[in-house]
Amino acid sequence: MSYSILCKQTCEIAKKAGNFISEQKKGFNQSFVEYKGLHDLVSYVDRETEKLVIAELQKLLPESGFIAEEGTHNVRGAKYNWIIDPLDGTTNFIQGIPNYAVSIALMENDDIVLGVVYEIGQQECFYAWKGGGAHLDGVKIQVSDKSDLNTSLIATGFPYTKFDLLDPYLAFLKWVMQNSRGVRRIGSAATDLAYVACGRFDAFWEYGLKSWDMAAGALLIQEAGGMITNFDGEEDFLFGGNVVATNGTLHPVFLRTLKDFIS
Image 1 (cartoon, rainbow, N blue to C red):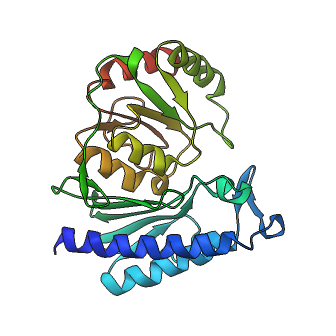
Image 2: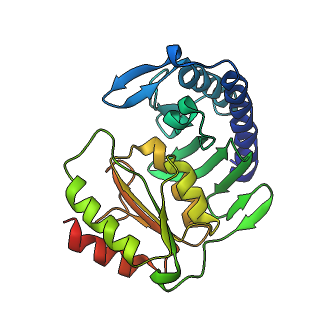
């Protein structure tokens, strides 16, 4: 299998999904909003986009299975499984805030071998395949070379359903605000990770995430020369819910300090 060819085909599927989402935005209103749980929003746009993506991916790799956020076709494959977030940043989409993305990753056995994040508002396609580097619209990207946290721009996401770590999280957020160039909260973890991969952000952390939030972005960071772990510094983060992603150089100090607040 050629990961590079498959990756470029996946980019086209992500863009097709992004175009569908953009078209639906024109007539979207609050009456279409549903709740999956506390503050956890969804609409027909998420579900129909997921169906579109799955149908197209099945043509590329018929034997593959799917781990998809909206559960429209969660059937596991023996070797290959696509991990899909059809609309990462649903709340932004619903509120008319132009920061949301399509995230698609391919897992071969236990390894992520392909990742695509299509950021719809900027129409930017980030992609990577294992051993092939990370790219943005045909140009190779890499993480920043920042070694000083005080000159670094950090990204995070705020918990909206799981609040057991909220107090130590806010304490660490305060420390980061005082010891960095600033903190940004875009509202799309897939986009945050892509931005670390291309050097716009120097680090990102969040808890309460799912595999479909992280899978594609994780490979982008690894192929761009960065580092991504869970809060304990372990590489087995994908299904654990919490993640720290950095340019690599900042990882030790960021992780060490995070552990002082959240243990």
